[in-house]
Image 1 (spheres, rainbow, N blue to C red):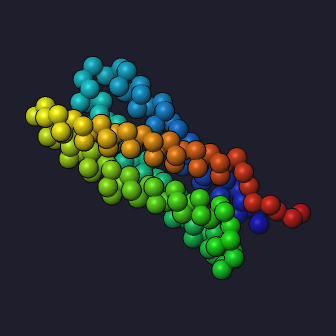
Image 2: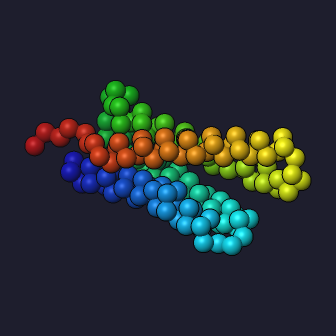
Length: 149
């Protein structure tokens, strides 16, 4: 049982640590230090894609492990539902938001106000959902399931 909890904690820490390192350190540093904002944006997109792949893998393993360990009882565990929500958010990033932002960036050079407003909307939505994803992850890292010794 302790090995399962340690494995869960390790995967969560890897996932949430990468969210924090990329979203709140590497990407801001890229925009602060790279001279070309387009290069920084492309680099940021690649970093976020890598974090999403890691998140999808970690969430899948964690959810399968929870189901295998707890069976039908898993539906009553709040940590299961937080993990499921985190997986859904990561899927939204991977399958909708990132491709949409990439498509908008292709036509952003036209300078249309409508395109710029759409980019701002998706960028704000992405920032807020990323912060929510990070906070949910931190809540899982800092908490634990009760274990009887």
